[in-house]
Length: 314
Image 1: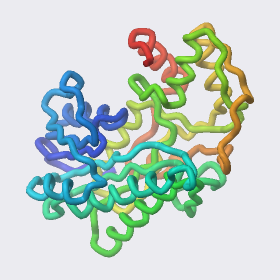
Image 2: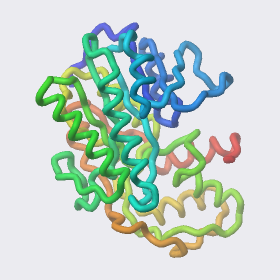
Image 3: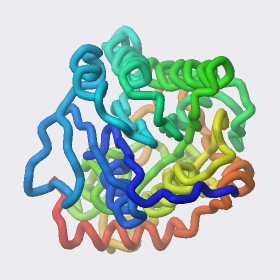
Image 4: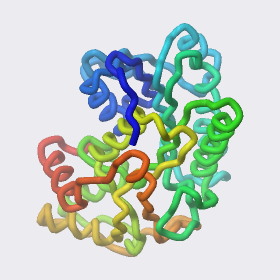
């Protein structure tokens, strides 16, 4: 991995910086000497804001508003975490999901000042692989199975086109299942932890899906390595543990560590077209970023559960 020099006081814009991944990156970026600005769609409570971070309230799907705010600002690095995970079908409101993710990226690229831009880091999704066989590799043709995944895939191809035709300095990172303390309570692991803490029965799928879980500290490290690297423009890079584990096994691990819980397996159907084996080949991340995940699933579950013993899940 070839690292950039003189990153101290570089300006980093984090779109979606009040979310789970974004807020963790913001904290680490400050520790690494960056000046951090965060864009959030919603007004973020003052008491939750990170010291020394500049917060901007704007919806990136509103092109004119975004351009007006960004046109006179200079950022050497932009991290795009904008959007939200939503697996609804097209007929159930997927058009809005697509427009939010693809149009938001398009608007962001049009609005930022490119004269001083050194790196644009796009956070894609393992969902872009869709029905591909595991382990998923970056050179596989994407097979999206939802409006969310086609939007992410479309953004990937748009940005790679810009790299090929205009040398736009972009790298696409594809995290797999990210987890850890402070994650939104609606996501998979917090839901399981909450269910087990309650001691009551809760419904889940049969849990036969093989998935790839990666702890938030490892993901944050991978993102910062990509920002600092000089040799990843135009690349797609998986960020994952590379270790497949069944959903059922993860649930059982949470139940065992908490000491209670009554999951009712097989009560929730699998999603239409759901890939039963979604785990990554991480060779490219190791080669280009010198990065590998360090936190095991057992240690990660313990850290996450211990956090929620102190901070209740709402």
